[in-house]
Amino acid sequence: MRHWPPGQQLHQGKYIIEKILGGGGFGVTYRAQNRKEGKAVAIKTLNANVQGKPNFRELQTKFVNEALSLAKCSHPHVVQVYEVFPEMAGNIELWCMVMELIDGIDLASHLEDNGIMSEAKALPIIQQVGSALSFVHQQGFTHRDVKPLNIMLRRRGLEAVLIDFGLARELTAPGNLKSSSVFGTECFAPIEQYETRAERGPYTDVYSLAVTLYVMLTGELPCPSRFRRPIDPVSAPKQLNSQISDRVNAAIVKGMELEPQNRPQSVQEWLDLLVPKPVVLPSPKVSPQPAQKSFETPPKPAPPDTARVISVVGINYIKLQNLLAAKKWQEADEETRRVMLKVAGREQEGWLDPESIEKFPCEDLRTIDQLWLKYSDGRFGFSVQKRIYSSLGGTREYPEKAWENFCARVGWRKNNQCLYYTDLTFSEKAPEAHLPAAWCRSKAGEVRGSGWMWWFFSRVETCKV
Image (cartoon, rainbow, N blue to C red):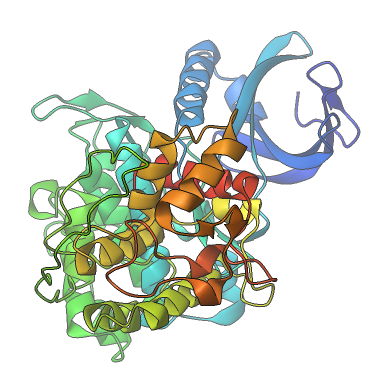
């Protein structure tokens, strides 16, 4: 079988092929409609070239195993896999992977249309992809084909999503050589991918991610790693673009070290070279307020000594940090609302909907929460609110009563009525978990309802905030 034509029905008519989206050395991807749910999806399977190989069954088994592993990866910057299923194609049983269809453009096309990026625009994208790779590595896999063509940018806010795990493989333990005949993509593949037996680890993807940033900032492809011995002829990116900062230039060069042991050994280690860690002010000491007697106070973790300020979409949290440090609680609350709408790309709408909550970057959610925890001595923050909400029975099955109890517990409800935002208490004397609150304010000025709140607390739990 070469390709399925438009109109081809798959999985007993559940999906109908619309067109081919693209293909590579191993797979072909189609746009299709899920007829039952009425939404577009991407369906990937092994291409005609692979179908004709003598070891096709072995390759397909790996494809299915990797698809099942990827389906377990729930991360805002990793393409979501919905299901896998077999489909007969002539006399071949062909397995298919159904994935999220990204509404956007790949990074390679974006660069071709718009030219090189500034550091301000490029670094948030690299941080997002880096967070995705760190997550994938924690699941025991390397991607092994990181490049602009495999990074999709959503139309909303240029949010990055890592796609195409066709070359993904299990991590190898130190000292354990892995056989492979797959090289990856020229210029983006590190030297170990050209060796038939070599160790591979997170540092393998570090090289490709560093090259990706090199291309984003210079518009040039570096010398392929297999031609760098013995003279190692790689131009530092700053030689091609003088606007690149010394820090970023050094981080790229370090990430592109030819020998694996000379590179940062994890993506996060490399990101720390790329983006400076924030300077954090000392934690203020605030005497905790006594808990309300009508509720049992659940145990709470100690506030963080430092708050790591990270944004994967390029948000500047300095203003929020300064307002919290100065104890300007209402201004900090309003700033929280502003940055959350900006992160979600919902500034025009002025409120968060379930879809934007579900896709809200975990890194930014943690940053906002950590800042509130730090400067309130652990009294305010999303994680505090979620802890109390859950302790009062806040589940998907019983939200209404739990919501009423929660609102009363944190001081958002009095005399069986939700308070208006202007009636809230913006001081350290407010009940525990009273703030932040502006992010959940309705258009009428009241705190929003329990069903909506469940979506948000579910995201807080998913992100392990």
